[in-house]
Image (cartoon, rainbow, N blue to C red):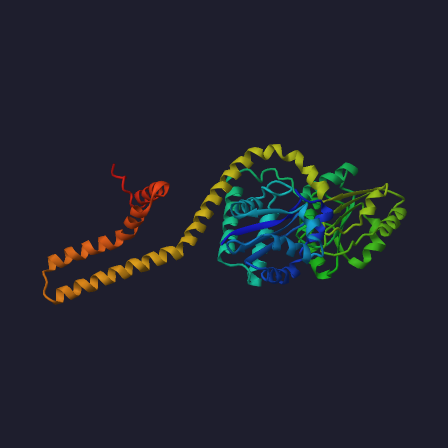
Length: 423
């Protein structure tokens, strides 16, 4: 059953396109069920992050891939023509290799970043909960996790990692030389905000505030950094208090922008146009794009952070070569597993036929013994009969073949029976 992967990522699509194809975790189960209604799709999983939206499938032999891309476009209210300019497609071996590289952080905007592995595990879990993760795709995910673990434990791919969170701190340093006296507002309370909070807190800011739609989530996050000066506010308070903050980092799952142009303009007026750094890590974006045009606003998006980390690539290139070797070995091993799995029906039929031949021969021998025939002669006839029946198929195939077919069958028989091994 062929494997297939397709989607978009930061290599093929800008943020403006990527944010149109985001799947919210609560929507993935329903989306997977609609995907399984596409002809020839038997298993499926969806990976949706700020930098990529990818679909992994197990298809029936001979299936075409056009209906899959049509489904993705239709699900998000887009046309296939619009999507095709950014879409990549990976059949079978390329799909296996791609998943291994994604899990290992080799395809990430920040080379070697560890968050993607957790996101892939979540994708597998959501597919399993939706009932769309079968044996083949489930095994592929497990092998992906094993390859990623080996890459991270035996290579330096994650050494001196420049994460998105660290990049955000670095960018703010371009505007504010000293971060110790700054006030920082975090909007959201998810994993990315927690990572950024840890990085910024280490700089010793004057005050940190967390704003979130759910007060309990904000309070829980603040409690994990209780040794810092952190308070929480409701999301509805952001408009009134935005002017208090020098740095704003936002990453929510809101389908619409949280910080609009008018809100930011009012805050700048209150601040008497003291600069503000804004980091938008959300997909779709939390901060309206027009905000970047304001003179005293320094707005950075995911794509900006990705450009920053390019400077750290050279130090990790040697580790990439080692990691790719591990990926190649993993691909070869998984293809062998697939081949062995595909061979199971043929092996079962072959054994059943051999067993039927054996039972017939034994029954004939038992009847001869019951009649009083010489046991030694009966055993000799039994062995001869089994040999003739088991060799009848390959012998007949060889005798009826001509030309190149004869040579190919002869070589195959020699390989199967190891005819030249003694020589």
